[in-house]
Image 1: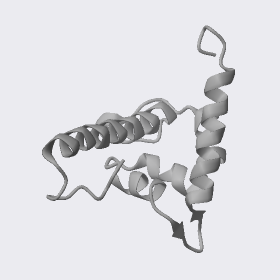
Image 2: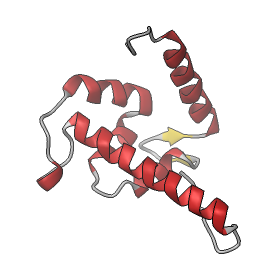
Image 3: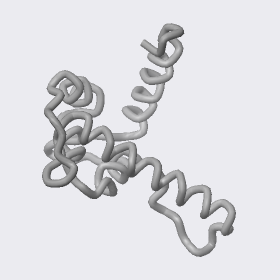
Image 4: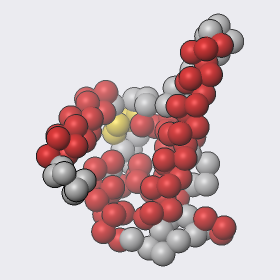
Length: 113
């Protein structure tokens, strides 16, 4: 997700990044739905195990953002540095998360588990 799209970006790059931003937004909304955090038309059954895994992986305040219908807040938070009284999220934490996810991907068996 890149919140810095601007008019100076070439149309080909901008189009590609716009598509990437949309995919990221749909993925965040999908995670919120898989956890059962969404309300209204997007409401689904609660999946406490998945939500707990995301709370541990992303931190509790960031995981709570998955309940928002608009994914912009969580995507901006995940891609910027933030230090508030309720949470800290920075480049080091993003790197740790990326390494963790890479390791998990490599350790999956042939069935995707």
